[in-house]
Length: 358
Length: 134
Image (tube, rainbow over all chains, first blue to last red; front, side, top):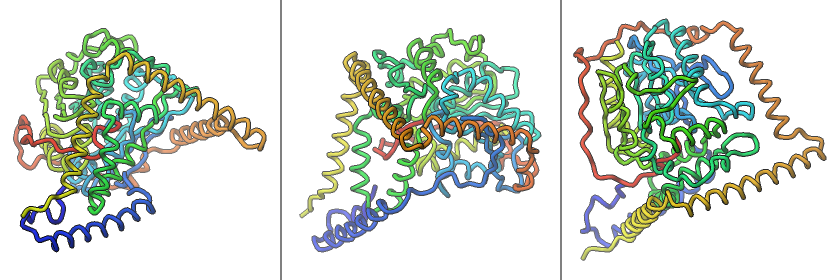
């Protein structure tokens, strides 16, 4: 982050330097008061219609902003621990707003916190019920048979599982963002000595605090360093706004159904069965070779949660003729949201999708 | 004479601290000791959570207020009613709200789908809130 006097070199006089530091100190104080006295910036404000809600699942249709749209609608599948607001942060930093402006018809599968009654949900419910249900509703709403499925992180795993189990359609394209396949390469899954049961509370759910702590565990200094950088950059309103939006995104982490977490921990984490083979969903064997649709996997070069070698087997294993892996500089979140994503990933996504959405 | 920048030193110290701690964590993430610590921590926090819930439920009972479970059950019932209403009400409400443009758009450069080139690689910058929950 460039400070006001950084670009003026070391030839600055002591008086100018002091003036600049005092000015920043005043801005820091003003922004600190604002930080403490105002709610975090609102996110997820692009106009949308709730098409369907069932328990933890909800399906939104975003209102078109273009006079003419592509034939094939996009259906986003959000990671099950987070709200889809990460795709719609704020004006100028909303992937959804960007795609709408580029003429795409956008639907999003988002999640509410699962209730105690939903603690029994498993991968089967997400892959063989929720996704097909939403696809049917998108087809009905749009009047188009073909769909492009776009999954982020665990949403990418669910989308890839769906695609592998439904090679006959109706998917036209599959796009995954930083999706873990070889779980032995995933830092969090390397810890094999704790019992999944310990994270499941009396209501049968994994509380969001446990998920946040588990994610912090692999980069324990990240939070403190982030706060220290905030202090340094408190004079910069854009930095503070970005920090608050990301902090809000983290604070809105959702609980997970206990059975779903147990299954992920045992099948994907311990047995690594998505990569090694042997994973069965609803009695059907999952084979990534059966993914035949056009496939794009966008991987973040510096992703410490899902490192590139954890994500790369998707394109390597998929049976699609038209498949592509795109590695971009960035981390797990900055790949899809924030100023770097606006410049790097979004235009590439548009470029890939455009020709495949007609 | 060049003036030392204390904030530059501060930033470098933060980066060194973060990289050092995170590298240490990465080296020990698969250790048995860490697994035992996580187990014990989870056991204690879940135990405390259970104890506080039980105490609060007792308190709510004394105050003649609904417990969290009862509110959850009520919320679940309401949700079921909402879901039924969603199914019963006509779905195309969105058409009345949002215009439906024609699905005739084509890419600006009408070419066959082209493979993408990766963006130019840059040196990694430490950022805020990255690698967070997803």
